Image 1: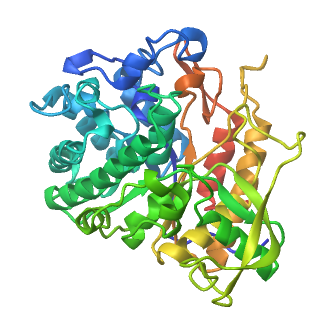
Image 2: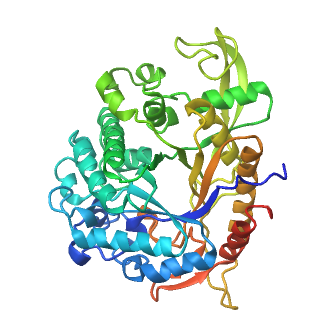
Image 3: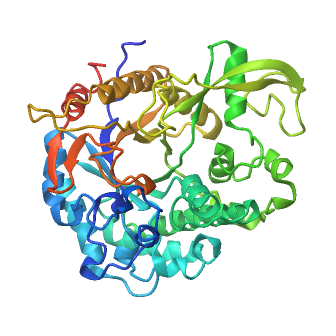
Length: 475
């Protein structure tokens, strides 16, 4: 592993989301969201809990920012609750809601912490859900109006913006599988249409932000998705991993290019029509023009990855030559085989969080190769475990420290190889409401005792503070 360190302007941060930490669901004129609704569906949330209090951040914001400063954070990624700004999703602005985010930004800047604002992290205003939500094409205009209001209010101080957090997750889990809000189980055809509307909203929101913010801003998004890690660093395995990452593998809406190709390349992947057949929605050119707005960085929420090895060489399908996938002969390609992890492979509290430290390097490399040499920002990375206060009053989360140490070493490799890196956001600042899983999975650098709201910096927070202080040299 190279001893090179991170670029001088690289930012070390932590991230949260509004519904997961704020609480105060109806304070100061806030309207309900789809997660307020979801938490009241019987059996929808583990333990029958809600986000009504969560970390009580709405009332404890100043103390939480002081805690961030104590931890040495250089940047903080937060989301705005759309229904705190627009209680009905559109129409009248709730100034008290905007005032909270203005106060948060001012508090961050006073603490020398760079604010990164996410417009949408899953908590759609319930009133918009009743008008069709992401299934209604008009949502692109609703979202643009919301983006413009927020941009005018915060854009003189907030330079870094993200439009959407993990659109694949809130579409698939919320509208197709029914496990997340709003809990619908729609067809693949409907889910594809829903996904297209999210990308239209991203494009319209990007335009609205640039027009509304009084300074030049940097805009991106925070998509999800497993990395694909070559089983060895042979050219064949690297090509197989690249091919697997950027192919549509059956009728699934999880595949990365379905969400990122339209945003960064201005077109859906060519194999989407072949994969989905009559279920495909055939987007028009004007829609793709809206979606394909110039962006300033490549964001990625990255927790895990799947190993891939090369199989037999095969004749490439039309439009999927090895050349179009990143190199090789134009008439043949490398078949890719995803390798399952053994049952004993290290995993976090949630089954999808398999230990795969190389994920950060290969995502940074493959994404910048395909989507352009923009700064790569790790918008989320972290580990959940069953942390508790020890007899000495501390939280000894050695597994999290080891996880972060391994991942950051591989991100450092990307820097050593000349991949431009913009920053890294640990998920999460503090233990919080983990959606349908309730409060048991703990992702935080800070332990939260939910009955008392006592915050305790875990060993990982102290470790991360030292990493930030020496800019990764201790890794």
